[in-house]
Image (cartoon, rainbow over all chains, first blue to last red; front, side, top):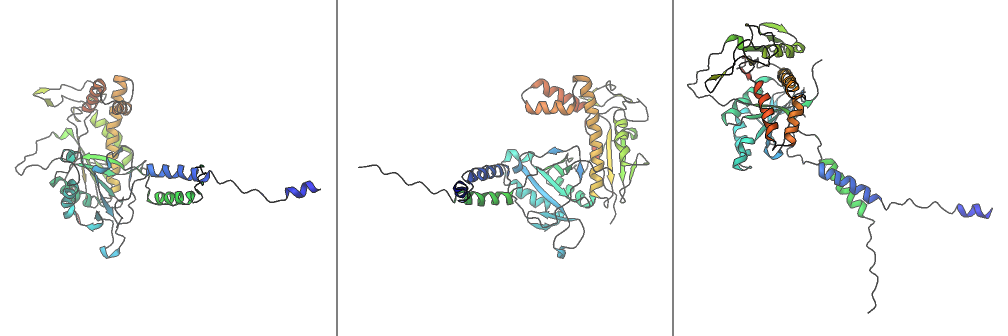
Length: 155
Length: 208
């Protein structure tokens, strides 16, 4: 019986020596895949339309993003046609200034490759998009990408 | 002097530090890659610009009204049929192509359409004009654009399959992986110019 008594002498602690290794592995994974959020959204996260003929946007530094959707703060009014540039709700008239400002951040020979990504909610109206497009044309920012999810919206 | 053993560094808090960093990156991470339908806007026309006269039969007119309904070539249509109609129009090949450096590109020898005289002459002359209302939903607008683009993709894939035995999507991918290959580049360019994407956005119908 004395043999059994000996075994009761406490369960050995779980070896956690490998824990830092596991955590570091996860850490490196997220460090590599991470991209920092540059702007905080002033509009509700737009529910993007879906499309199948999509192209990936490369060279993140050459992309400037315009958000269109419903403002979080009701003081800007309701409706899905609010435009956000940088951190502020703005109007279409401020788009040229936004683009010119974005251009100062990249090398001159890269300016023709700059793309404007329009992230608009499904329920926004085309009129808003057209207003922005006309302004973009005024400043010769001709490459536009309508941001979408991949998939099909046709029921 | 006798060498003394250096005491082992306590690594017990290592996990804590790593966890802290991990949580930080977990919170700030966004995995999604931005992708979308890319378009090139036309340049701003000069003030005295006179638009060229284009034959009615070379224009494929798509109208979207403010209730998100489609009117294609004067007839109501469901979105599901749009792609097929667009393919039929682009691939018709009823006449001669446009002039390149003063020389006509001749009739379309790769088109498989009906060669009807009432529809487009040549894929490089076929223009798709999308007119939407200001009140149209952006979602519908994108669906229409997507359907039209997929019509072009279908035609390009078909032609590439016929010429090279693989789809255009695959051909383009191969070229992207191997940018220095001039033969691949020529093949891609040839198919691209065989079915150039000419989708124009007409001025919207105005509404409040």
